[in-house]
Amino acid sequence: MEKADRAWETGCHLSPLALLTPIPIANVVAPLVIWFIRKNSSSSTDEHGRAVLNFQLTMTLYFAILLLLGILIGK
Image (cartoon, rainbow, N blue to C red; front, side, top):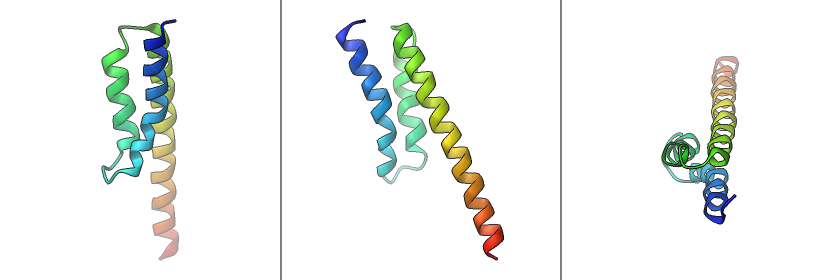
């Protein structure tokens, strides 16, 4: 594994912190962009990218469902 690959993998894992920006669903878009750019260059980066995307999509879906339930139950 090259040092550059590890840097991209680390960036992919840290990119969901883009959620702190005012861009909606940035926690999914940022790792998606990194994964899409690097998926064919390194199998390791491909695996890490898919794992990060899977986790972020799952958490976003759970949050949306809980938010909807909170709104419906709160009325």
